[in-house]
Image (tube, rainbow, N blue to C red; front, side):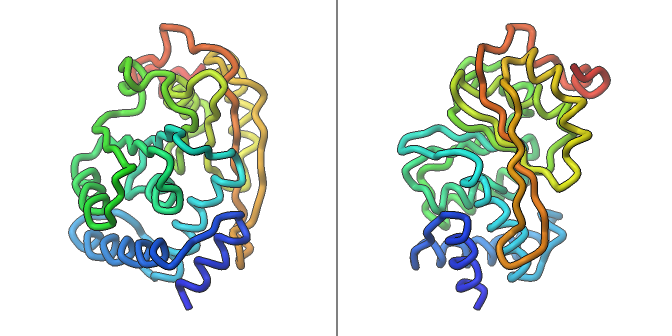
Length: 237
């Protein structure tokens, strides 16, 4: 029933999950719960809720952007792998880079990558603002995602420097995103982003509301950004 709910929910989001991919989600769940006993990866421990609140939530990104064959996707502050790992499972034709600063979480993600045979995943041990200053990551990705990482004013400086011109940044937020977004608009323009679009949806089969903030990169980010982490948090743009 859990697999059926995941497959049907994904279909509502425009994503097809085949039997092999459904098995990978099941194994991902087992690994998540096993490792969660060692250190905190998620407060959600019911497999059905994981399927909805982690997997379907992650797959909602497909409502926000077109993922094309060969696209480079970066998931900033990926944590236990959301939304990056679900994206990698259902789209083996895109390369997903998981950016995470915590070594324990990267060790878990490496286990997931190996056990699920996800050769399209790359792991990067870095803080987001540091990755944005590294030439091989700066303005390199077609799509950059972030889920429950920081306030929008801070998040845009973490993420927009990673997006190539013409690419998009998807910020995964809850229903009350408007006030956050209002405060972030000046910084979005400064960092090269265009007018943000907000896509509102409910996770399939639930009344859980989500907001996807989609920002297209219109021009290069000035060289002085991103700043160091403390400055970003203390003095948002």
